[in-house]
Amino acid sequence: MGNFEYIDISGDVGLRAFGSTLKEAFLNASLGMYSLITNLDSIAVEKTAALSVESHSLDGLLVSWLNELIFRFDTYGFIGKKVTIDTLECDTGNRAGLNTCKLSAVIEGEEFDPGRHEGKFLIKAATYHRLRIEKTDGQWEISVIFDI
Image 1 (cartoon, rainbow, N blue to C red):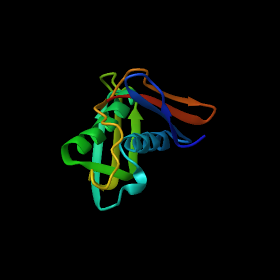
Image 2: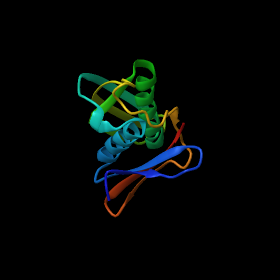
Image 3: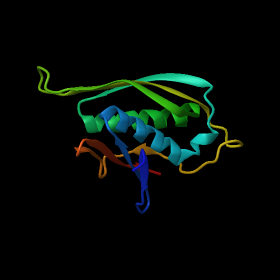
Image 4: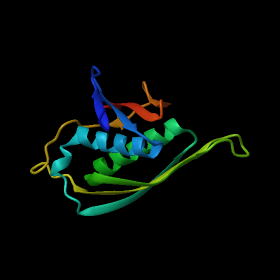
């Protein structure tokens, strides 16, 4: 089993990402999403972006994280080749009874250049449709569908 695989779904595109840790599964979901946009081998490491997101659930954290990467691509043309997740934590049940989940990471990559980079899918958003984050037999698996 690789780090990620594509899900064949009519009208949209999806992927399954795997990891021995939750952090690794999130990282592989990020790289899998970027590989849906273009061939990662053609991306150079020229710029760095530090990002952080928060949510009240693990599912929400994943969707917010991937949508932040999509926002950076749509707004600035920035596409990552290397992702380093510094923090990924979910504190369950604070005083208000809410979870607090946080992710901070550094993305290394460059601006997308249609003359040099193959365009694959134009991803609009990560969705909650059929979203799944689950640990089975010591392996984390994420399934996520993207609107295209």
